[in-house]
Length: 288
Picture 1 (tube, rainbow, N blue to C red):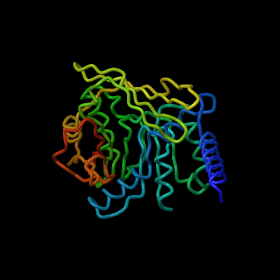
Picture 2 (cartoon, one colour):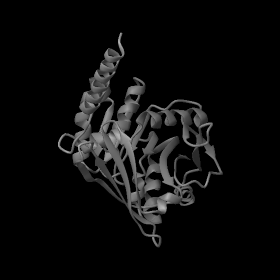
Picture 3 (tube, one colour):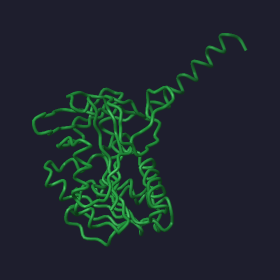
Picture 4 (cartoon, helix red, strand yellow):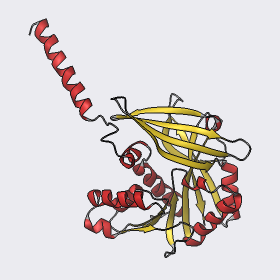
């Protein structure tokens, strides 16, 4: 084949690749904020992998009943249900709009049998009354909305009371020197850009206002798709309050690094010493 024909073929292939990429582009008009959130923020497979890991390591068995607090679209509950045929989940959230969206999406991604094993409660996590469960999850830093020690301890006490005798409470936290800085961080994803905006930090009381924006290839933007008014809790504060709430042990699971020492490797182990890096996300496991 001649060089001219080769060049023409490469041009057609490149044009086809660009067209396929454009087909995945989101715009402000077509995008759905909850769908973008699930695709950019959550990694439910990894979260459930971790739940199964700690049950195996700490209790030497598997768990079947999980409660997802601040469940939002209940994507994590859906992942739990898919793992095994005897798994059951309970999702709890106050936001009627996001719960309705999540249930509509779950009807698409779960079978009828799986949906029957999912119980979504439009209730306050402080007031919900259910049978004792093996695992309670509070992910995506959702419990940071409790801004005083008394309020956060009170929530932890409610979780403690809702667990079976050998139950586990699994939550996450973030921090590092960058977490105290008012800044924006962008991440390019499939068809859109995710923007994490640390919009405000008050060093006197620890209050933060964090926002999520989405930017699209056509130049349109979804500003303030999500806004969070939290207290930026530190790990010693969280673990001390868990113990004050009655848990027998609270362990921090730190992520390991790749061989080049640059990025996390997705493997979390219980540690008592962490690296003083600019940014980190950890799991915390509290044992009843």
